[in-house]
Image (cartoon, rainbow, N blue to C red; front, side, top):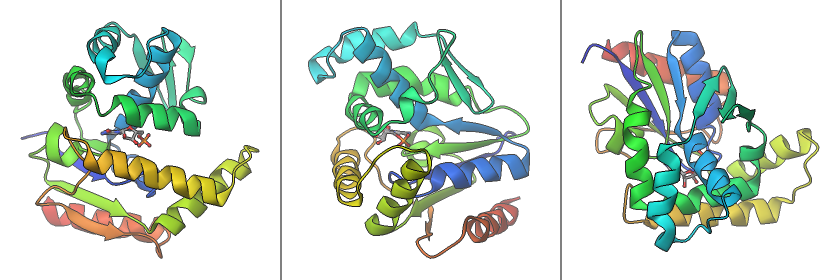
Length: 220
Ligand code: C5P
């Protein structure tokens, strides 16, 4: 395959979004934030008055197929409206996790995700980039960090944006989302068999970037 893909999968708040974005920037590659697609799906369905119940998965998948989603730099537009902030709330994350367990919703997003693979290359951030969407990717990283560490990072992020939060409830939310993502029957969160595991609990972003770039160079 001529167009290289670097997959970055892992649990909520493991730091993969930050790491993947820096890697895409440094490599000069395109970037796919696949979680944002599930977030937008949750938002659009809620706005359309469809409850996020598996009985409605066909309706949600149909809604999704007609959705005009556009990426402009780090901004995400839904039908021309900038929803970058609206999809970042904890509630939007929970809703994303809910719709992402519906097989028809996942299926409706497969081709769209693969369309991000363009020259000179792609860094793809998600849960199933290495297992389902780009199974032949030359490098699959599975990024983890301890739950305490992830809750603390998320806490600092929210507080710095002036959004009130408590560590305990964030950690409980993270663990609930992990449990749902790991136990669902379609595309459960798990490392690809050929993934490289990286626990970044005690690493700076720069240190993680260097480790992954080293692995990437080893694949070229
Ligand atoms: O990565 P992010 O927190 O934005 O993802 C939101 C939710 O979308 C996750 O909790 C997960 O349930 C779902 N997701 C997924 N597959 C992906 C990316 C995200 O199921 N590739």
